[in-house]
Length: 452
Ligand code: HMG
Image 1 (spheres, rainbow, N blue to C red):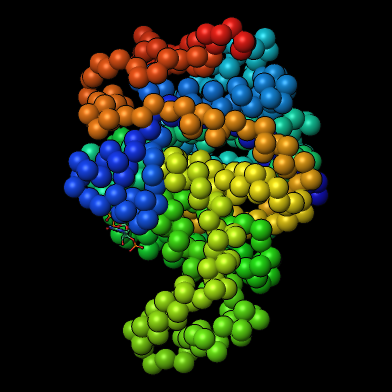
Image 2: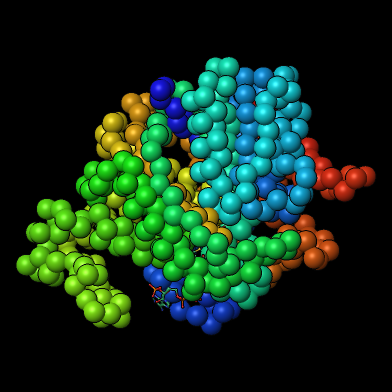
């Protein structure tokens, strides 16, 4: 079986930002520390008036094609993962392909196109589809373009409003990849849940507190399933553990649970025993409640140990740096977490070639998936070529009143005319609706005349 995985990435952030501690918190009457420390998001990225899932996806994809010197005819497949789609029939990938074809000489006529849905998990599922297509030898030597693009908005006043975000990540999936190869083994944890859903509605119905528990339960099942096929995992075997990151506070909970699970019956559990005892085992207790209480005490102790805090600082904290700056990008979120870890290692000058990442993806409804990735020799130059940090720094900072207007602009139930806050410059923009209610787009060339 050949190596296949992520060869290149590009990221497009919504061009506006909402500052949660300084702009959102005062109006909500809440403590800024709730966002900085508790939820863990400082800024949410939001789309300007002329941006949507198509423009953000097409802009990320164009940057990627240009960087790799590829044309549409070089691509064998385009899969778009999104939970913000606006059409139940025509996939977003056709719109994105149409945008790209308007600026390149060749086209995507022979590329297979689709749209993947399973809440936030579908970005990873789209990569799986591309991986399987390559491994089956059906790709005719061509790479696949996977684009995860979302506008994650909640109803105004919903607790989820503090975890919004918007952006797209385009990933080239190919043989002999430059960034990471993907393991053959996978683990799944899945159940029919109604914690977060959008039954033919734009904004989600959310049971926020329960969604946190459902995430943790499915992630635990996926890890156990992964170990049943790939063998026992050890926390020190991984250079980083990127999780789906709806907000960094969620990852704090998942990481502790994952650490507890992976140290069980290992040298680390033994070493910590003199401080906090060994982990309670269910068969040692008469009732679930006694076991749960004992486990809570163990977890509280574990969280305070130097071993856990060092592991968290090395393997988890680097994965959530960008989530703090952009919020939840739904399908793109776990892929931003992977990028965040690699960017942080590249900036620190670390050598990661040959190291492994344990990747935990999740989608409400609900399913978690766990697999391992191996960092490839060319990872650093591939990561250093991504210009995400610069585009984050140039976002327009919204006042609260401007935030209210932009939320209305992107609310499908409202008709609101608002002037854009930024100028499109070398990018695709949304221009309005056509005769069959299709969305229409055009390319705005770069003002400086440098870009194509
Ligand atoms: P909330 O109820 O407003 O917040 O919203 P809270 O009161 O639970 O506080 C959040 C954290 O801040 C807590 O930390 C507080 O203690 C802390 P925790 O105890 O949980 O560790 N806090 C403070 N810390 C320091 N100083 C302070 C302070 N005040 C509070 N002053 C909620 C939280 C998650 C419910 C909300 O944001 C929400 O509904 N979000 C949307 C749902 C969501 O993201 N769920 C996550 C799991 S489901 C998932 O990941 C899937 C998803 O991405 C969708 C998909 O798959 O498609 C959402």
